[in-house]
Amino acid sequence: MTSPVDPLAVGQKMVAVLDDGRRTGTYKLAVAVALLDLAVELAPADPDAKVPIDLDVLTVRVMEQYWGQLRPFEGQVLRQSSDGRSVILKALSNLRNAVAGHREIPLETAKLLAPDAYEFCVAAVKDNVVRYPLKLLQNVGTSARAEHFLYDEPWLDSATKRSIREHGNQIWLLPGVARSLSRLAPLLKPAFQLAWAQDVRGMNSFLADEPDVAQHLFGADRVSLTRPAEVLAAAYGPQCFYCASRIRRDRQVDHVLPWSRVGLDGLTNLVLACASCNSNKSNYVPAPGLVERALGRGRESLQELADGIDWPSQYGRVESAARGIYVTITTATPVWHERSRIEPLTRVDFVWPVDGR
Ligand SMILES: [Zn+2]
Image 1: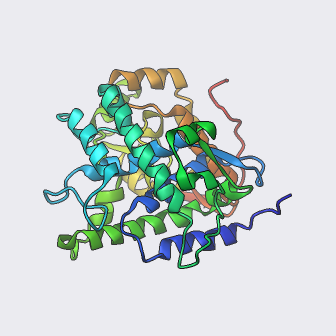
Image 2: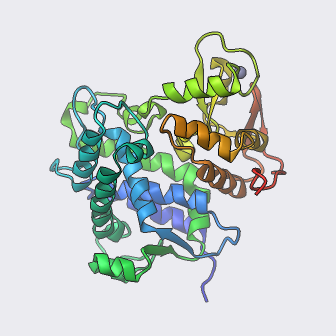
């Protein structure tokens, strides 16, 4: 028997992780952000449910965060640890070299272009993630006995490939933790990214006065969206997804579910938008009907369009993330309906999945 988890208590402990001044690398932050994103996508209907986290999925989420961060900033790849050595960055750099010539592509595109190098990278990153940041994430402060408030997996202390296999290649978030993290994600994710940017500043002394580090590390422009824009215009016409006006110049690509919230670059989450809708929508959660329309373009046709440019579609992830967002936000949360119409969420009245299956 376990009593329901208090989201506030989980939040306080996550803040303690954040405040821990002993970080010598950014990897725990990356794992924490990956868990927050996964908690949103996996947000269970039962608030007290235990939720399994597949270790390969977790690994790829960590890789996705670092992937765009490898592009040089003022000519240099930023250090992510005090000593500048990093198994994770080295593995990702090797993958990046394997797809050299393709500029700023999503990680899933690299997987398609260089499958062997990708698998090699996943194995190396997973080994490191499991043995260090995942094992150490909950060790906060100076107490000898860490309180395991997210997951309690003693076998992580001496994890091997074999023990990972024996545990089903997964860890279990404790009862109530997934729901708590999904509710806290809108607050905690920006806080973790802020701490991450501060750590990176400390690890790269030439950045001291550079204001744009966070944008470089976490901004939506980490990936070039030129090709999706062309495909969307060809398939759905050159008009704004939101106001239907014909876009004559300054065609922009908008993330339907805000990039800052879920970080999904898949074609399912992308639409063409005019500059004024795009800037007005900003980081707001979209009205459910807009997600429904984006998904309503159809799983198969989006996949086909995405395949044509070696781009991820991420239909399932967009669907899961949207469900997670709407089941966890409160009815008072402002959502964006159209330009200059931002209203509290009143109800979510569409049925998942919208694709007829
Ligand atoms: Zn518009």
